[in-house]
Image (cartoon, rainbow, N blue to C red; front, top):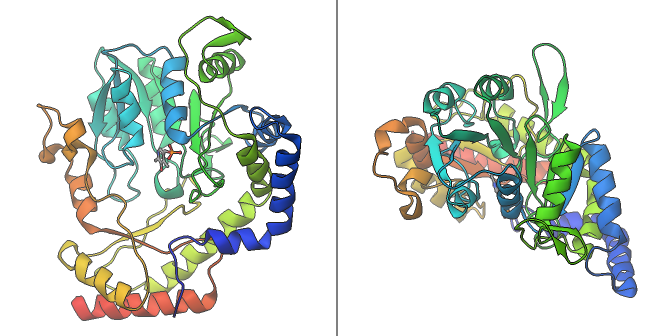
Length: 378
Ligand SMILES: *Cc1c(COP(=O)(O)O)cnc(C)c1O
């Protein structure tokens, strides 16, 4: 079968082409390329989607994380706890601001940060925790909120992969991913669940004062034009991207449901197949499946990927190297023994194609060939 992709942005575009093309044309006609009306209207739409959070659009998800840490006035030397098993951006901005990234291991079932290890990693210098809602489901926010409250720490949610997921607290409230900490950060990188046609990102918070600070920092620390009260950055969402996102946001729930249907198909196809572990769900969170990541025997992973590739089925490894092993993040007092889960996951995870345009034929083809390969090697 030809044309199977990890993500099918073209197929997704074709279905909304007329609307998208008109919106892009409209921006070009109006020439308000920076901070045009679409930026404001997308911001309001996302605020509504996030149950009334204050939203500040910015240039990308990495900037969102950096601006969040600046807005919370974290200072050089402050410690920020995050997961060893994540995309590099999470730890990168911690380092860039002169803060100390304190990496902890993740849980073997859901691959999200282990709250017990977070509690153990807290010192007098700890200021914030950055849980990553990895692959599309929420970290253990209830426990993390409790820990943060107890130690007076901020929570910045890295919600680049889980926009639209919800989390249910034991005492009832249901919250959207990214709205449970002090600040939530999102990326609109094209392949994310809500992706634009270039770079984009946003921060959100429930705190109106904090929202004002974030807004200023993202715009050169500017209070009113040419008056700069604090050090900021230049991080804007393009009007063109906002126009595209405004249209795609209307489809986000449907897109997430399409991903969930793919995951359900894979789950069923792979149930009872020995040697692999299908993705475990956090019972308090929905899963919007930014990735469908399962684990296979480490020593067979390359051979399985080669089999798939021969059938025209792409696969990916998110992530092949633990952060603590990356040259840029080496720390003298840190070694593999502190991260047994991440070390193992980096050797055994495998992500299969999952996107909004998959057909039953494709799913059938991918899962039958995957199972064939697994049976051959195990
Ligand atoms: C994509 C991603 C980011 C960064 O987003 P960009 O828009 O590419 O800067 C940060 N964290 C995680 C977990 C991501 O997946």
